Length: 71
Image 1: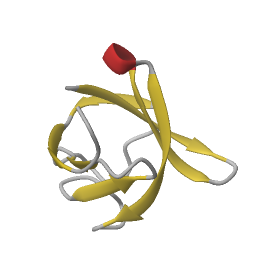
Image 2: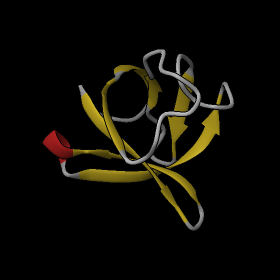
Image 3: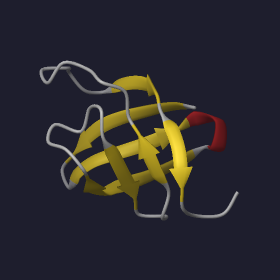
Image 4: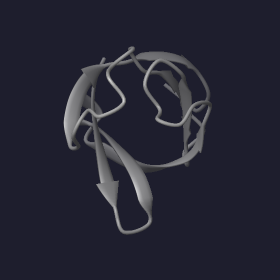
């Protein structure tokens, strides 16, 4: 699924256009987040693709949802 990752004053945020959903990132497996799992405040777990550490935000990526939350 397409997910836009952006930086906010409170940290990273993920926006899923197809669901019109924006949630803060509450856990990141890696720093930077590329190539690892992230968990959103709503409970979703997403796997982000490998990207260079210096990737500028905001950026839209193809993420894979692996768990959490309804739907």
